Image 1 (cartoon, rainbow, N blue to C red):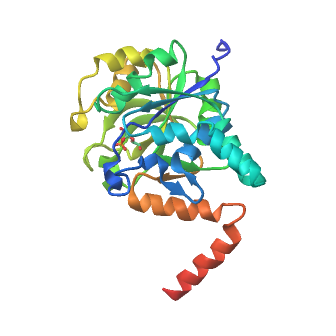
Image 2 (cartoon, rainbow, N blue to C red; image 1 turned 180 degrees about the horizontal axis):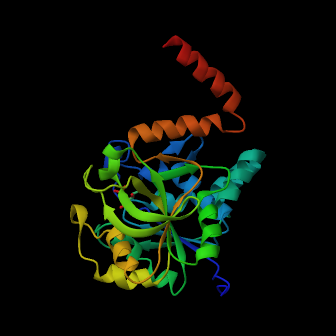
Length: 295
Ligand code: G1P
């Protein structure tokens, strides 16, 4: 029997409450999400991915000291007037575009109790509908936005989905790892999830990358999830509990993922995004070639 029409996913939750200790000292006084990749902060790439995927509302899960993120997407009357007066048309348009990208709501995570707890903080704003989660450290460079690819799959399966990619076996302890059975091209039916397993303790090397499609039933599970790996309430543990109740899929998206919360991953992202930048790519490619030749 054909499944009924899926509910359209309108909301995306983006946790930005983390301290960014991996990026100290750069993240001491500015949120790590505001570090620049070429000409915009990393968080703007994440928000734009959601917008390009057809999302209507962003819910930031925020904390003290992260106001710069909200300000970035806000309308700045003074800046608007100055740029207009000075005739800086292109800049003026770009600054205005950012503030009109999408409807943004911000919720405070009251205590730093982990990713699962951060998602639970969105419960009242998400309400009773399926939603997306995007983690700010994971940038995906792809032709079709990663979330759009996931939403297309969601329209078929109508069950929760986690984005995954294969990682070297000695890196499993950095990620949530998914064990499952292939169900169609690049799609796995999830059987088990383990948060940051030590290398060699799982046969799978399919790592969760920070994109999820969840149903509101995850909230009741999160409310009961006890602290796990690192003493934090883990989304991965709640997802494992969810597999006992309903089907869940892991999806190997097409695109390249960069861990912008890691120093090396951040540098790789800067290079990759510069090589794709419409105005800078030719000059930058030439520069990179010169640098490579001089090594
Ligand atoms: C979080 C999740 C983990 C996932 C990762 C992706 O970990 O807990 O399952 O694989 O994001 O970036 P974190 O990187 O916040 O420690």
